[in-house]
Length: 300
Image 1 (cartoon, rainbow, N blue to C red):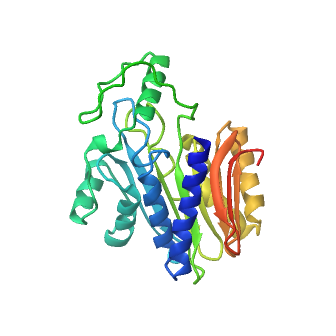
Image 2: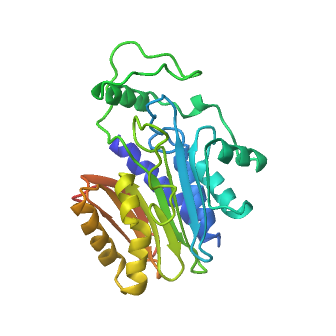
Image 3: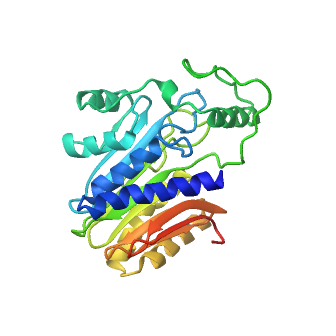
């Protein structure tokens, strides 16, 4: 499983680098990389997203253009193959910043954003995680989704995996434009239409040319309350902190609240850092000169 994650992150770097190397925009790079991860069942976004307590995949995403600070976001979509593409359509083709639920997908249909049956997102690994979490909470287990493969015979064992996760990308193009994007399936067994920080501009995603690009992952309830992404950028803009200093100060706030997760941050010169307070975070970046760095655990 570790080897699969490292290979997937190297592929993501190559996808983004190819777009930027031929003069493509940071927005195009962010969208392409996240779309690829939304199609990869390894990640908690798109196909492979975790299930809510109702047995459905509820997907959130956001994207922001640092050149104009235009932004788009979607929450609680259940049929959109690539929520990040729908978020960008909201940004560029609607007068709004965030759309949710049926309305978001109705808009997506008018924009020819690909729709799929809910069974497209099903993976056995995530379904087993849902059943385990619901049993631990003494909650009812919903029926398997229509169109999902039949339950396997015998006992399946999957590697231990955190019950939440997010995919996020920050990029700078040759014109100095920064873009950031985030996509997630949320948390396993979430209830009542819960929405985390990923689609919230200023909490899970933020970009501003000359200052920063940020994408966050973790327990969104804390990241929303702290306003993590915007707070990091504000510290860099107004207090003239480095990306690392700003991230450290914001994580001091999160640590005091017992909030867990991580961020990827790029400054206005294209230097990237990451910060997290968990045992690990799947993370990768291209160093100047094109050297890939791929890490998982906190001691790397």
